[in-house]
Every structure is written in C-alpha cells, then in structure tokens.
Length: 220
Image (tube, rainbow, N blue to C red; front, top):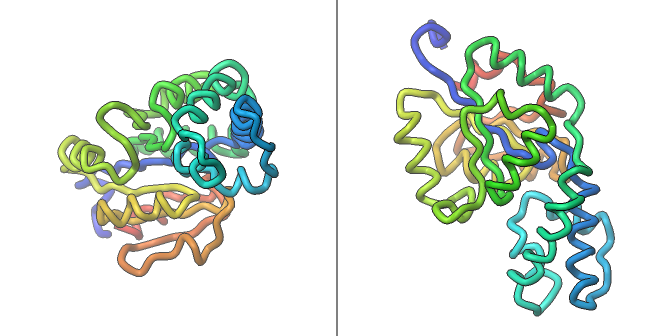
C-alpha cells in the first residue's frame, strides 16, 4: 500500500444497472412488453428485478420456450423508445464519480447491456464524461467473462491496478476472472453472502457513495 498513490495508476470499473443507475422501472416494463407481444403472461415485478444484471437472452430463456432472441428484440423495441428514459441515478453516484475522477482514478463501465444502449443511457443521465470506456454486449464481447473483454482490459490497462465494482455475482465473477479486487454494493437484489468470494480481496458496501479512496488503496 505504501506510495501506491504515487507509483501506480488505478482503474475503477463499474457495473451499470443497480450499481450506478436504478433502471428497474424501464426493465420491468420492457420485459413485460416483450412477453405481451408474444401472448405470454406478465411476470411479477420482483421476479424480473431479481434477474437484472443477467443477459437478456438468459432472462427470457428462464420463463419461455420461445426463441429468447425474439423476446430480447421486443424488449429493446420498448426499452429504446421508452424504458431508457425511466432510469435515474442512484443517490450520491454523480458526486462520487466526480470525487473519484478529481483524485485521478480512471473510471470505466462494464455492463451486460448492449453497448450502444449503455452509451445512450449514460449520456442521457449526464455522466458520460466521467468514463474512459463503456463496454457492453457487442460483436466482439458477448458477456462479462468473454476472453476478448479480459484481453482488452489486461492489455490496454496492464500498468494499472484494476478494481471491479458491482451489485451482481457476475461482477464478482469478472473480478475473480481478472484476479482483481471487488467492491460489492447492496443496491441490487443480492446479499452479502452472494457477493463474497475467498479467492480475491472484497469489500461489501451499502452503495457506491460509500466508496473511499483509502478503502480502494487497502484492496491493492
């Protein structure tokens, strides 16, 4: 930890849904829009919210035998027109991003959302300028554990300490895959137990706004 502030660059990579933004309303409405389009019964809000952070195809595959890609396409029809505007920043996020940026941390986003959609929503919420990159599902990256994602991060940021921040076990899995520390936040639907992992250094917080620079340094 000694002199780490002066001798090493630090990259903080954030999840999006339920970590930086509350997008429950838009996701629930988009999900049930897709189900209705294919004459399927609506799903309870709590069940949909529990799945947030999981790739869309996997979400739909859980509840229907219809080709999940068709349902995901219908989801995005609604989300791109209406759902994207039903999101809000989680309390304290903008101020915390500004604070961390001022300390010269490098900030990025890794999400299960389509990359183009993630960029749109981040711009809409006015936090785009805080991030050096926004990585989501694309032709080159299919999931948070895609080897192309790992290769990108470890090559482009090989001189950095990387810290992963998120609310979902998939974020924890990403941190483990990168052998990076993990800061779990409880603003989603997952418990402390679900976010714990013995193979990497972990800190569990109530929300992003509780992140402190010295806490980050202690994980490195």
